[in-house]
Length: 178
Image (cartoon, rainbow, N blue to C red; front, top):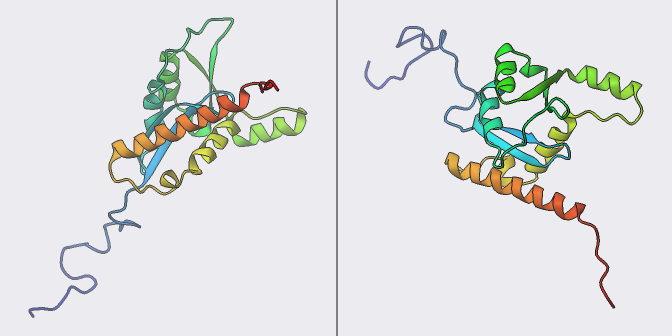
């Protein structure tokens, strides 16, 4: 019969039953991976589609540092704090090739240490604060830009503004003559 639409179970074999329907077809999502230093200033970032696993962005994030790092030595090793989502052999190889020593802890371990040791601060929370500072920019909280290069430029601009604000806040106050 012409002009009649498909009904459930009609048409292509298994069209409804076997194929998963996306929640938001045609929508772009974004995932960002941020590397920050001890005070929360972002020093490296990478981004990709929202359906990528965090492990896939690790190498790009570590390679995105714009300034050369000092060499790691026995007396001054360079540590990289990661959560349990990065606990893979391939991650340890990627981190080891770049002369970092990985520290991988679960959130529960950090909470137990904080409860036992007074004044102890979890290192991973610095990254969460940095992500929060990036989310204060409306164009990054909800991705409005369609081109990946434009979104990356906005991420870099927001990271530069965070670094500028942190450097300005750390500068000692100068007394004006008068």
